Length: 210
Image (tube, rainbow, N blue to C red; front, side, top):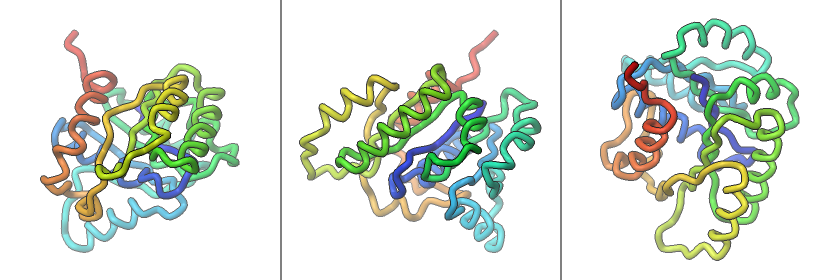
């Protein structure tokens, strides 16, 4: 199973969402996961290496790689269908190396916010992704949503995004997300992420009995 975490806009929370999902799948669901950090900042790979220096054993491996490495890596990683591969995508769309990545995706999570700039980037990402992969589920995750802010464009944004995929429950903005790393998710964050991840897991990732 190949899961992409992507949006064209930087700062949408892609890397944090990838980290939270990997922690959820390994720690809560006890699944085998590998994370491939293809974002140009490679913040996940840096967190992973820092955790190893501190003698913290992560429940999964994080591999720093470029888009050009994907075809060979995925041939190896996809050999076991029960293995979940999460890719934190780079925040741009003008690289032909994205074509095989998008084509191979079996599920894509797209974090976004309701402001105009985020919406435009999210729509562009969705259009490009759907042209390359018309069939894989695309789940939009409202991310870093402030509870005391009224988003005037929320209804229109959700209407437009629903043309491309489904919209999950929102994840509220909390300073505690900064404490998430490759070996732990702070417990106070779980009530914020479980409504999103449990539904995604049930619909797309749960191994059904034969």
